[in-house]
Amino acid sequence: MSLPLFLIGARGCGKTTVGQALAEATGYAFVDTDRHLQQATGRTVADIVAVEGWEGFRRRESESLQTVTAKGRVIATGGGMVLATENRQFMREQGQVIYLQADAEVLASRLAAYPEQAQRPTLTGRPIADEMVEVLASRDGLYRETAHYVVNAMQPPARVVNEIMALLCLARAG
Ligand code: ADP
Ligand code: MG
Image (tube, rainbow, N blue to C red):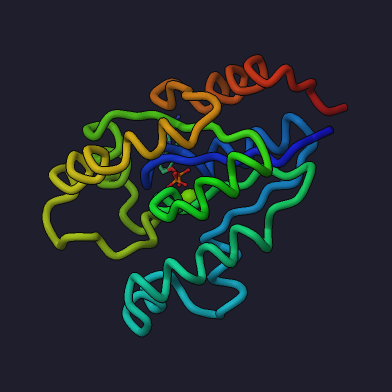
């Protein structure tokens, strides 16, 4: 069957890191909606937001989600993908949705350590730790209602991958 696997969660929870490792372990292809959007437009997320606003970015993000979705793929999504009802429904219907759950302090410390990998303008312009608390307060419920499975993303990436594979009864490639 190899339904698409969608990884959701806040910026820094490990969607890209865990997604790549999960794809490698299972032989699935890996795609990242943020990266797809950047390649399709030739612009960074920050540029798109600066020119078209968050609304324009969100519209393009939904298009990216639909374009990259296919069987046999692990799809890492942008942190705000769950904000649109349309996207939540689409992911649940098309595949298996996994929420990589991590606490705000953990997310903030990861993003503080690698700010260049955040690739996104902050949503509020305030300190990252405060912002993560607020982002999770408003989105944790959406992540949970969209997910078929919630996984603890505060363990090392290899363990997160093993847990997902066990939950979904996925076999190792080769
Ligand atoms: P996302 O794609 O969800 O924004 P990333 O995969 O880019 O998150 O990870 C953000 C940062 O956190 C990276 O520096 C990555 O190496 C680190 N990281 C991701 N997952 C873990 C993990 N399970 N344990 C420790 N560090 C992690
Ligand atoms: Mg990412």
